[in-house]
Amino acid sequence: MNHFTDLPTHWESSRIDWVATVNARIGWKALTAAEYQHEGYAFLATPNIKNSEIDFENVNFVSEFRYRESPELQLTKGDVLLTKDGFTLGTVNVVRNLPRPATVNGSIAVLRPFGIHPGFLRYVIASAITQAHIQAVKDGMDVLHLFQRDIKKLPVPLPPYQEQRRIADFLDTETARIDQLLSGRQRQVALLHERRTSVLTECVTYNEADAHVHELVGKIRADWPVLPLRRILPGINVGVVINPSTHFTKEGIPFIHGFNVRSGYIERNGMKYMSPESNSLLGRSRVRVGDTLVVRAGSPGRAAVVTREYDGANCASVLILRRSERVIPEFLAAFLNSPAGQGQVRFSQYGAAQEVISASQALAFVMPLPDTETQQSRVKSLNESVAEIQRMGQKLEQQLHLLAERRSALITAAVTGQVDVSTASGRGIED
Image 1 (spheres, rainbow, N blue to C red):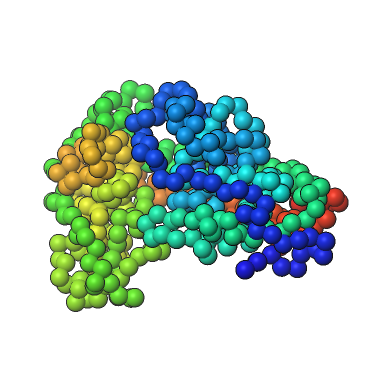
Image 2: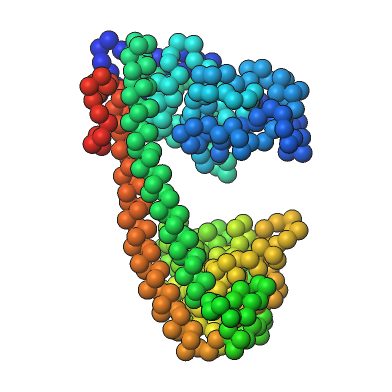
């Protein structure tokens, strides 16, 4: 079905396999990461094509044999590269320059135009219409996948070649302006993340020049004892290892999974629920107000305090650090989320086959422990700083969203003939 409607009367309708060849690596032909070399032939992956220019520097390399065994994937100028696997499905770029011989891994399809301008094809695929089509035909539960047969059938509007080139040139100029704004906002977001890390460190450490230096904790006051968690907490429980999916309901008692635990807060989006009857069967993994939850697998170490709305909830894939009279929960979570706490998480995983932390490893973590009055003062200051950072972050995220929408709308309008690119400017086009 062609989703490009109301095209100019002198445009034609086509599809990708009528204007380009489509090739992708069939399996890996027994290729393993052990075959990667320090130099040789560039082996592009999705991260190399996600920005405005293809990155040929930060790449893996393969041998000449691996490069030549798939001649259809030996890149040439004008090739359009499309991600067909994973959560970045639909990422698209065009080979404008080829500084070294290169090929692609199994996540990227190579589209070689023979009846369409490469830049125009790139923007057709990047348009909201084609991206929606890709989302509609993607397959896979754990790993998303776009089959070559579906890529070949993607619809393509087809103006005269010279008009295609003018549209591509126009979009190159206008999207570059938007990308520059996006890049600036993303740098500001990165600076906010750095500021948040800084205030976490300030909360749990002492920054005077003459402070004592501890190899894991950082600068602390001499009168702040450094203790392992086993001497601070009454105990640690482990959330259920396997999700009791047969007990899940549409509403009821919250069931907190590791992915719901973010750095400093619990995310409700994507949360599952269970009935009171099912909850009663899982007493050891039930949480109470003031417990601190720590992600234990996947990307372990993030910590958040259980607030009143989650009192009595159940959980999985987390460690439950039970509340102690010696440490304020928010101070404990701040320490675990700080570079000092995260450094110990990484150290505990050194040499491990899986990214998992155990209760015994967590109990061995050491932290500075000022008196509770100092903890309260530090937490109050931290909350004020984090609230301001979050307000600024929300504004930046909104701006990023609007810029991305403007970029997509501009591309879609141009590749469907809704704007005359010979006279139009992309600035201000949002719908």
